[in-house]
Amino acid sequence: SLSIGIVGLPNVGKSTLFTALTNKGGLAANYPFATIEPNVGVVPVPDARLDALAAIDHPARIVPATVEFVDIAGLVAGASQGEGLGNQFLANIRETDAICEVVRFFGDPDVVHVAGRVDPQSDVETIKTELVLADMATVEKAIPRLEKEAKRDKAGAAKLAAAKKALEGLNEGHRARTLDLTDEEREALYDLHLLTMKPMLYIANVDEDQLDADLPEIDGCQPVPISAKVEADLAELDPAEAKEYLEAMGLAESGLARLVREAYKLLGLQSYFTSGETETRAWTIPIGAKAPQAAGVIHTDFERGFIKAETAAYTDYVELGGEAGCRAAGKLRQEGKDYVVQDGDVMHFKFNV
Ligand code: GDP
Image (cartoon, rainbow, N blue to C red; front, side, top):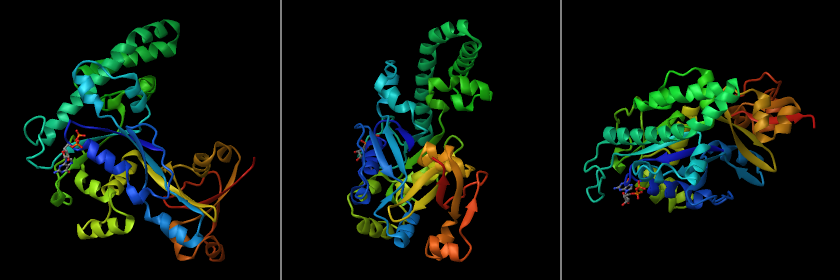
C-alpha cells in the first residue's frame, strides 16, 4: 500500500495525529489491521464509493485501499545530535512513497513551541535543513562503497558520479528532488533512498476554527489544513457519531480523508474497484495505468495472463444497479490491454493461468 512518512519539529502534534490516524476506533472496525511496529500504522482509505458499491452487491466483506503511516519522529533529535539515523529508522523510511511534514499553525499558548513562537516558514526551513543533513550523511557514508563499485564497472561509475553531484547540491542546502539531475542520475541514486528525493506534503496543524482558512504557501505548496485535536476526537467516536461531529463542525470529511486525497493527487494515484458477492474492494493504481497493469496490482498472474477486462464506469454501475444492469444497458464494456483505466472503474478481469 501507499506509504507516507511523518516528520516535523517536536511538539507540533505528530504523535497526536499519528495516534488519531492509526487508531480510527469504530471507523476501522471491519478491517483487520496489522500493527507492524509501534511507529507504523496501516489506515483504510476513506472512500464513500465503496459503500455505494456494497449496497448493490452485498459482499461478504468490504476491503478499502490502505495507506501506511510511518512516524519518523526520531529523525530530528538523531540528526541534530549528529548521530545519523539508526538502521531501523532507515529501514522504515526507505520504503515510504512520500514524506508528510506536520507544521504547527495552532496557537495554544499552553503548548510550548521549541523555537519560542509559532512560525511555520521558519519551522519548515529547520526541518528541511535536518532532512538535507540526513541525506548528506547517507551519501557520504555510501561514497567509499561506491568508489569500489566505480572501479568494477560503468554502472558503478555512474552511481559514484551521481552521488557526488547530489552531495554538492545537498551541501548548498537544496533538496535532492529539486536538483537538476538527469533521469539516469536519479536512477543511479535510487538505492540511496534519499529523504529529500521523495515527494513532500505539508500538513498545517491548525486551530479548529482555522480549518477552512486560507493558508500561506509553504515551499511553493499549498499545505493541507488538519486539526490533530479534531482528528483525535474523531478517533474516539463510532462512525455515526463521527459523521455528526464533522457536520456540527461544518466539515465535509475527516482530515484523514483530506490527507489521503492530497497524497493521491501528489503522487498521481487513483482507485478502481472490484465488486461481487465475495468482496467489494478498492485498488490503488497510477493515473494512466492500463488494464493489465491494474490487474497486476491484484496478482502478477493477472497481468501476465491478461485477456480482457469487463469494465463499467462507477456512476453507471451505481445508477444501473450493478453488473447485470450495466450489461442490459450496454454499459459493460469489453476492454483490452491498451485500455487506460479511469478513476472509479468497476472491473472484472479475464485471464489465462
Ligand atoms: P509531537 O512532539 O510533534 O509528536 O507533538 P504531540 O503530538 O506530542 O503534541 C504536543 C502537544 O501539543 C501535546 O500537548 C498535544 O496535546 C498538543 N497538540 C497537538 N495537536 C494540537 C492541536 O491541534 N491543537 C492544540 N491546541 N494542541 C495540540
